[in-house]
Structures are given as C-alpha cells and as structure tokens.
Length: 120
Image (cartoon, rainbow, N blue to C red; front, side, top):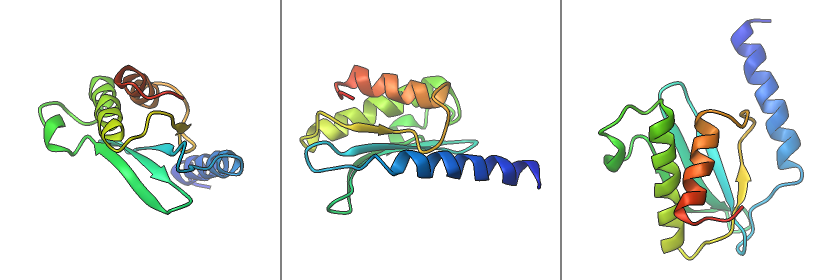
C-alpha cells in the first residue's frame, strides 16, 4: 500500500473510533478540526440539527496576514472560532480532533479556543 494511502486509512480508522462515542448536541456542540498541508479549518457543529454554528479557517480575511500552515495561525483560528461561537451562544463544546494526533497545529487550535473562552 502506498504510504500516503496508508496514512489516510489510519486517520480514518481513528476518526471512526472517536465518532462512535462523540456527538454534538445543542447544549454542547462539537468543535471539529481539519488540517490540510497548507491550511487549518475549525467549525462548531450541532449534529442533531445538522447545522454549523460557527466556523473559522486560515483562509479567512482576518488571517491572511500570516501563512496558513503554522502554529501561530492555528492559535489565531482557535481564538476566532471561540469568539464566533460565543456570539452564537455557545460556551461548552466537545473537541473532535478528527483523527489527527493532538500536537502541533491541532493542539494550537485547542489552546486558542480555550483562551477565547470555550470550555472542553
């Protein structure tokens, strides 16, 4: 198996295992992270209603000043999604790392969201 395909398969397996027990509710929605090679995306999702309550990414206008694929930008994305979630009336979330390991940019988004006022 190709190395890139094997890496994706392992991430999907971790993702399925986590999502068996994790779900976003109206009282406590899910903060989902997606990390690509150049950008990072975060969104707060209510799974029961099937709605995205707040989102932020390194493609947003506020984050254009920095490159998308670094830890400093990821921390800013975490703060931005926390601010937007607060405007939507969300203070508690469930953190969904989406199969990615909890380090680097994923951890930076989580830390930024905590600094922004989200609890998880």
